[in-house]
Image 1 (cartoon, one colour):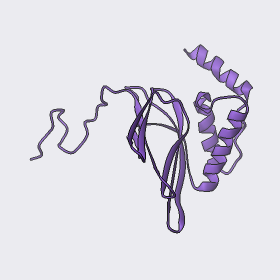
Image 2 (tube, one colour):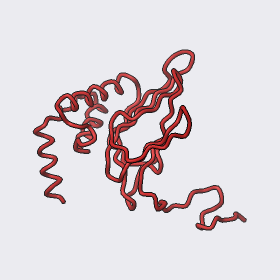
Image 3 (tube, one colour):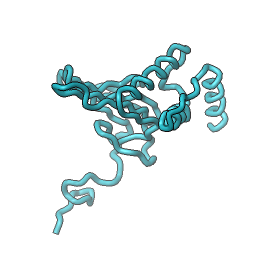
Image 4 (cartoon, one colour):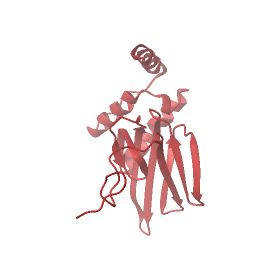
Length: 173
């Protein structure tokens, strides 16, 4: 017979309900030339330094952020990835990802340095247009992911598109 915790979950398993903490926490690690996890854009509301190589940034529900992961060994890069996520609200479903608690809504996820660098250039273009990448319509990041998955160039995110997104958000309340 399996023993249970006070929450009713079997010992060793997390309860299925979310904690009272509604923030999304992202653990960042930086070990020079080995593991480099960083936030490309986003507005965190809290930072906790764990040690000189690790820290945790926390995001409010519904905020959007870009999370880059890169790892290497003695022979070069072994993994590079960028995920653009939306932090979820307390009752929303979410996808789990390494280093992100509890998880988030994945708007874009790409692997491999050529695709990662393409997304980084698209983020740079948004910022060059005078917009903050974390304010971009979530649908744009989904569009970018979909177009990249079939080898097509995504449409540019312009100030006009951003204005239309803000109006739509205002109407939807």
